[in-house]
Image 1 (cartoon, rainbow, N blue to C red):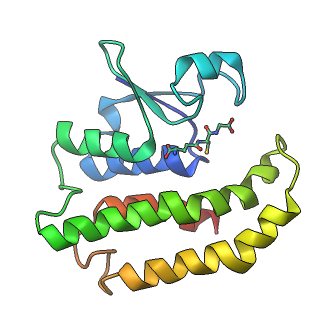
Image 2: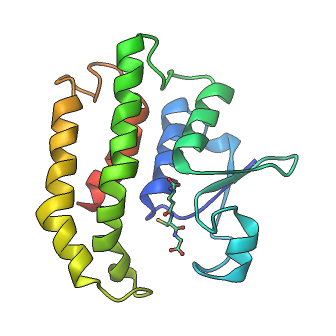
Length: 169
Ligand SMILES: N[C@@H](CCC(=O)N[C@@H](CS)C(=O)NCC(=O)O)C(=O)O
C-alpha cells in the first residue's frame, strides 16, 4: 500500500505517526506528492483532492487522516491506538474531533498563506487568533485527562491527531 503526502502536512504526519507507533513505517510506501496542490491530477487521484490518502494494493483509495490512522491500527500489530476503556475511547475520539472541527480550520487560516498559494485572509486570521483557537483550546482543556497522554497513560488517536498541529503552533 502507498501513503501519499508530505511530512509538513499535519494530516499526513498524523498517519505517519501512527505508523511510527505501530512500528510499521517499512510496511507502507511513501512516494510523496502525486501531483501539485490544486492540480487536476491531485483532484483525480484522491476523492477530496487532498493529501493524505492511502492507496491499497487492490486500488481502493482511503482519504482523511483519522480514517487512515484507524485502518493502520487495525491492520498492523504494535500498541493499540484505540483504548479498550469505553470512556477513554470516546475521550480520545473527542480530542481527534476537536482537532478536526475546531482547531484545523483556524490553523489552516494561519498556515496556508505561509506556503504561497493563498493570500492571507485578515478576517479569518483575526477570527482564528481572537475567537476560534482560544475556544478550541478551552474545549481541549475540558477534555484532557491530565495524564501523560490525552486520555491518561496510553498514547491513542487523540495524541496522534494533536501532536502535528502543536508542532505548527
Ligand atoms: N480533513 C482532511 C484534511 C486534509 C488537508 O486539508 N490536507 C491539505 C494539506 S495539509 C490539502 O491537501 N489541501 C489541498 C489544497 O491545499 O489544495 C484530513 O483530515 O486528512
